[in-house]
Length: 635
Image 1 (cartoon, rainbow, N blue to C red):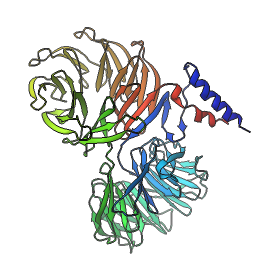
Image 2: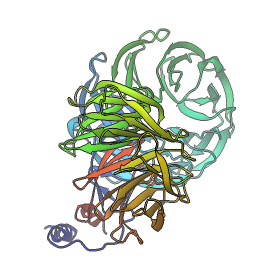
Image 3: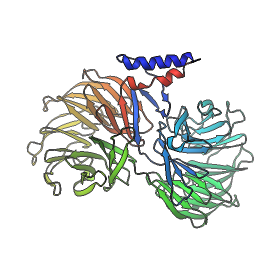
Image 4: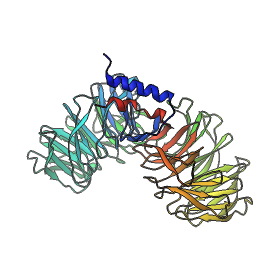
């Protein structure tokens, strides 16, 4: 017999498709099959690509590595030639740590909590379940029936995973410090708690964990591992603690020359350490009381390490996955790399036709050109590396102008092979192009006006030194609207490019990061002051006519018809109905465990540059709000 819940779910789904959308209460949290967004209302994640590589786990001949909020799955039968098997859907937060057990990978997914991915089919990995912990999941350890989650400023969470599709938090304890890593053995969990050192927690009763001891070292505790009566801790160097009496851990051995320690994996007589900017360290712990540095391998920013046989797999932030041969621990050697060239730290995005152009602060790129012909499967086609990583991008014909200290002019006629044409200026934070003029926001140096009629030979024409910090610029006809930080919005007449002149300004209450200009109105992303709406029909006398105080930090704004989309920092994307500009009303949001910097909207889709989550593609609308999984959870 078909259950009544299923019948109601089907009926609701069917009716929602044939009736006009009606107002609905916000669901507290939404988790659909294959998708876990932190919180969302009236918005759907369509596609995602990119983000830093932080988490890594390994089992058998398979390595799992986090790419922002998603998990890539690699066959490493031959470590010298890793083969991509597939990539999961986003879990909802940036993946900080991972543990692989059988058909499941358990991930610490920041604000999304503990995610459980079913990887039985590597080509179609899906989210089996999510337990939303109260803090920000930074580390995870899996024991029979339970997952222990290092939950940042919320301490330790204990999750029952006996049914992976229905994980349930059953216990927790608030600990001092900031829980970053956790391991467990026997009756105890050992938590690396940042500046509060090591915390020892009895988990005899997982529903009632109790702190029984601690060790407060000289540094910040990040990585932690345990073997018998010894705990290996990264805390101002590499420390070995004797925990034979868990109530009073004591230092047994120290290796100060072993450097910074973010993650530790033990194997035989060695500890393999991810040491941030100091790369991979191999430490001889055959005598735990006298650990010594055996070998090193430099990487850019080693976050986590996993071990399979004679190879270490190091997640190296935006430099990808480093595969290191450690068959000779005293002389670790490069075996291969896996680099998925997605947007690592996007700051801005522009969309034209089937392509998205992403300004990427990650040092590998600068500018990424993505195919978004299928928004559910964005694909990087080509990239261009500037100097420091891109801040903003503007399009003009077959050229992209990338603000990256200088402004780089890039020919994007062939999206697979963006080509350098020229560069101009310095200290560029943003650029807008109108006909033959490029208007450049240059931070403390104000506005620059450049003739780009010949893209190969740009010529500086004029400048205006704004009183604040020129962060962004938009141009309409003969006026440049400069988002000038604490000095608000400055309106510059550029009809005479050699002599630009300020004709009006409005000192907004926050920090003006960016603005969109439509129909005589300026929509200003004003930092902590949210969205400010200015009437600029008379550019000499701009007047505020409305505002909306968003919950985050308004970094960027795009307007599409009667909707304003706000890139609201850690509060994600907020959608406002601005049909009455004097009274904006929130009609949707999508929160993600990243930092939304800017966005572009076209054809009903919002393309979001999220500083940790990569590029997100979102759709606003009540029909796509996916209430179906929520109904299925009703008891």
